[in-house]
Image: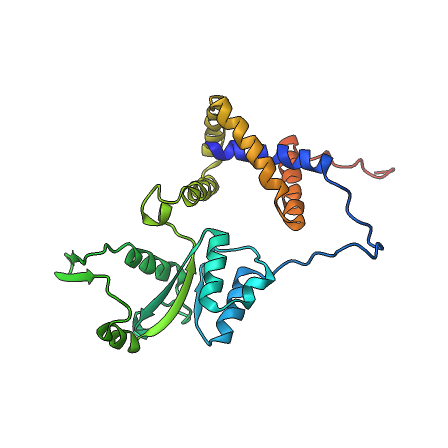
Length: 267
């Protein structure tokens, strides 16, 4: 389980960086530059959508902040920039209002909408038909030019939505087409699976994971160490600080909680 090695490498790299990092500028230094955190993905998307009165649905899995300059880009250009920085994807979707999946309270069911968009995006260049045995009807999907008159007439009668989402299909549907997406998807799935385990299963997974780390190719291990340190150096000060907190929490948890203070005299 490579995730175990990555967690350990995180602690090692953050600790090493903390020992070599330059001291922050004093608060009263007039030449110091105060860094401000950029807007969240949702806030940046909302700002871009407002300028063109568009409706954009953001997958809750696409999190974190983005540079403030991204929120000033034209909508589709900005969505492309955010998707690239977050290893996400965006699509412009046309649906009848009645076909937009909604919860009982009327809000859009983002998870189901995301599934619909992903499956439609995987349609081949030629048309495909799938027969539903429950009702004997065929579901057809085909790719056509968006500029054709017939397509424009079809789109005109439907509601346009933009959907920014984290792909759940590894590699955007074709494994191996995007190694970075593949790698990150494996990591996310690993963390999600760990969170669903029982204490006994977690202990077993950790034990077997340690054995895999021990048997890792030494060259791969050394390369991961170098790349981890380089990636750490390229992070923003805010991200480094967050990783430092995570690293300290990891090491504190590994050592166990400190003993409680002694009771006051007389008790």
